[in-house]
Image (cartoon, rainbow, N blue to C red):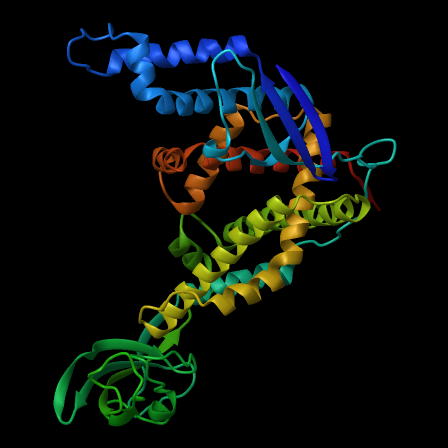
Length: 441
């Protein structure tokens, strides 16, 4: 094989590849041999049709098969010979490439490559220096966590007779909507518990102002007008009347903070034991937060101290993924808040997000390339054990079995597995820098 590489720019190379005539002939023989086993030609036993007849009938098809066989094979060889890491490959369409027997086969691949990164200081004798994070878990924080737990263990009890609803009280409501005096499907809620002061909507209604000051047994009527453009044609341009009956008023009662409270919370024998458990969990969470803060500082330093041109393809891929995720998140939030399906993402929304998210996409690509280069220099790799541990972590995070998460990853194909490996490799490289950093103080 002959290969010539031409530099088209900082991130682009043209690879002119020539396959020897002998190898071209071998591929033709293989292609016709396979064809002969597959086709059925009247008058000839399977596999016994003359080559001249096959050439006359199937020459164009065989040429395309030979090209499909040669191009990826020799492209891979050329990449290895050139010693480059491609992120995008442009190969000419098959109809623009010709192959003939007894003749060398040539084609040109245009390749966008990853940059060569000159790594700066990240370990001894010049490690990254970090300012010590001196945060600790205080007694006050533990007490606040205990109060949150106490709130969670609170119980609702009937309020004194005649209690007027105010912030913090709970109302048990029966709600029903009518249109022109006729009950309307989908506008009924029985036994709904509403906390005053939460300003939570019920059936799309803001009921707080109507309930404030009301008592057990009272009924309030709430008219709700809908615009002519409302998606529900039954109510578009009309007013629905909601009847809201207050069935009871309840108030929250907090348990006493004593040993009995601790026993009700779980396998604890005393209030002191649950305090110690809370402190341990909070210290573990704080340690993780401090470590994450240190790593964010390291990522920022790596981005600031390394300067190189980014491959446009990688930036666009990352940006597209970020925009897609944001649009999907916005759709979910819109659907949840309106309880109606949202339309397809608008082009202008996507364009706006592209402009907003591009700097972050560039930062992510830059940091990813730095960590990849660092991993290569330090011979950091991803083992099967690393993969297993990450899959187990993901399974616990999404509350699925390891088998289910594994099947999901396999369903995504090689690209999904490669993405997972890349994330693990980046995390291991970042851990390496963190372990070699110097924390002052």
